[in-house]
Image 1 (cartoon, rainbow over the protein chains, first blue to last red):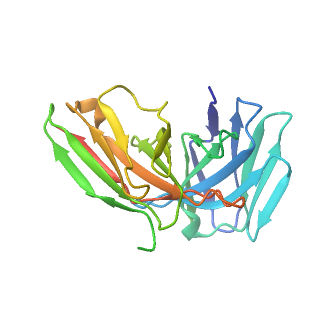
Image 2: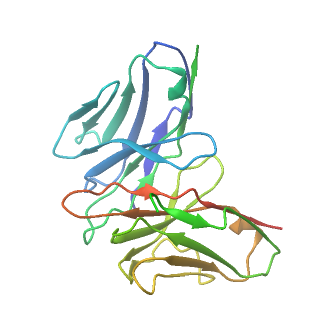
Length: 114
Length: 115
């Protein structure tokens, strides 16, 4: 079955620096790749997603890139702020009867220091 | 309500007892998912409902776990004869799954502790 690996498990940056989190997936049929942010004690919330027909997507300080050949995708956060501190999860899914069974990575704990 | 609601928020039960976890999805959302999230890990898929039909239960760990969504809205995840290894955060998510809108909205979860 699908497997998603996420690196690094922890990431510490200074405010204003960029942060990059990388994920690889195993199933070449996967075509939907969301990223979720989970603040301490709260529910995971979608921050950005990308489909396999697109190589890059950007939303203000957040961008996601996808390399289908290499089966990896990355989250880029620029000009990090303390409120970006959270656990970030990548996920992958493939079309299956019209629903998205998400396979998640293990998460990256991002700490942004003022 | 405005979001996915789960109850109870916390459940402590003794080993061997049955528990029922409730999920109230966003109104109008066709798809409902149950996930289990161990501490420090990403959510792990358990089962999926399309309206009242349970279309995928491949993630349920064993036959002590079952779920239902009888009227296509509220869902219940039941764990029979609980074991300590069942302790985790159980999260429900719902999605419109229509016109390309596939975002899954998660509930705040039920933290289950089996003692």
